[in-house]
Length: 246
Length: 252
Image (cartoon, rainbow over all chains, first blue to last red; front, side, top):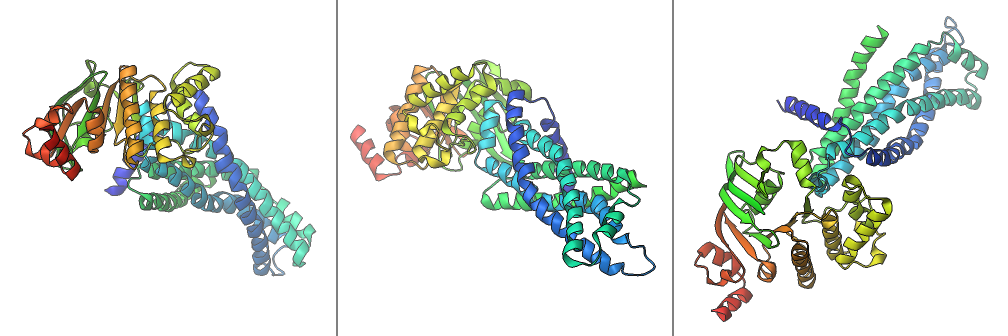
């Protein structure tokens, strides 16, 4: 019953979020700030994780495909498809659900418990629209760039592992990442990452907006945002994969 | 003038306000007093519309807020200023930006006009110019209250609500804040409602006082009447301290 009530409240909140802003000028003032905070500030963590996952994925794939029956380009091909299909969209979004989700939930939650949201409401501002819309739009807009950035760095990580460890030649790797390339995989990855960006930012905003009490409760809201955001990402990953790849 | 008529409010079957009726007059500092848990904050939040009442009417100069749609309530709220207990300043903005915020949101002023208005409001609450660029976390509690008052009056509201304006302040700063609210109320002809349990404030600026006891209006009068009231609950509340007992004896 609790989940049903929460779903209803979430839908009602989104109804308040997706209306025309009271002042577009204020929206466009918030929007670049959110692009920077949610998008650009996520670049370092995306870069570190993508490079290292590219490294490790190439090494492990090479280890598991060292078989004379398998073609020489298998390692590059498997690394590329894993990055394109799952890592740079789903796994990256699960990681960002932790970083961005907790950031959004705690920021809005703190505004709630310190009565800043009440202050906005008393002024006659649609607080849900003013606070949440720029975050959702900014994160959805930034996500494809983060995904492409992650794909590039992941593949780059795999390339450098070949140079650094001599487990394979760079030529074999480059052949693999170009072999039987399906451009639709990139499109599929971008579409689902944008959906996940919406889930992360809106679910986190929901938990923050309806938090109450004190600092402990903001912490709980933050945890709920990350946990439930991650579960929803996994669920919608199955759904969208079934819809787009089958 | 704000008129509250036969208001009831319950939370999960627990009735917090019982048939409360009161008139809050324009140009006066109206105070809602009562013990913690008596329902005064619920009454104030109901008047503003943050709580939906179960029964009764709330009228702002004859406009019945209880029948209004949310979009109309938002328009009405542009005539309202509020000073929160914890100031509720936006911590991502500077002092000046906080005061400019309602102007940017709802006025058609140019940037220069907005800055001029914000300066006027901040100077009116006696805030030094060197604090204008600071963040709320960089100024004292008393200064935060002054900024909150400046923000509340930036759009020249008709109605001003103050929730425990002296909470967390020393007696001297409390007095300054009280006098400021009183002065603004008279100067700009505002209907001010103050929610307080600070008896110093009541005695200083209470021109129309409503005493709430267990969710019901138990008494209404002014600061001069309060010494001669034969209401046990009110006397227990007002003259709880030795100081006020002595003041009462001196007045009799």
